[in-house]
Length: 116
Length: 113
Image 1 (cartoon, rainbow over the protein chains, first blue to last red):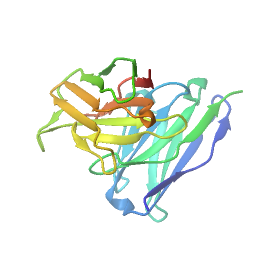
Image 2: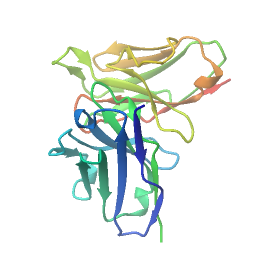
Image 3: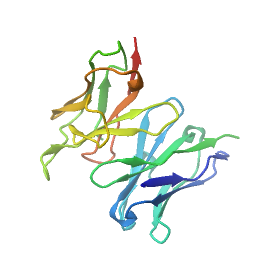
């Protein structure tokens, strides 16, 4: 069955960086775009960016430009989202989701807490 | 960026009633490639990721009960739940995917009266 399994929760200090992974299974990984969306506690959904199926093209929301890098490893069917220069406002659940014809499967989410 | 605005922010309805949530985009989101509006609707329950209900404004996702329907065109869209069930208590979001960033509405919290 289709699965997107994300890495576990992390606590980071302000100014640090974090890497969240999203491992795909149950489908042809190379056929799908992968998006990242985050949700601060008690807040709505915020689109962060997208990586294309071959991994050679990314588009980021301007808000995250210069702080986020999305990559994918086809050998392990895994997508990575690196976010740097963390601040307390980056505390959120981060989701990956696949998208071809529709945004039909989401990962379970990864809670990143930024706190000193 | 395209701004997406939902109304109302919250809604309390009785079981069996019809619930309607509105979504307005700041500009048209009709894709010329397929002549469809690039709008999705999601349901999110506490502690869970969003669940896709509707895409291309009116196409129901596989497995979604047929009491959920999407309509609208241009800049104005609606999610309708024809007969509210207890399990429909959730927050509902719309999202435009016409152009990046793929912006979301602020969410509508649906409760049982």
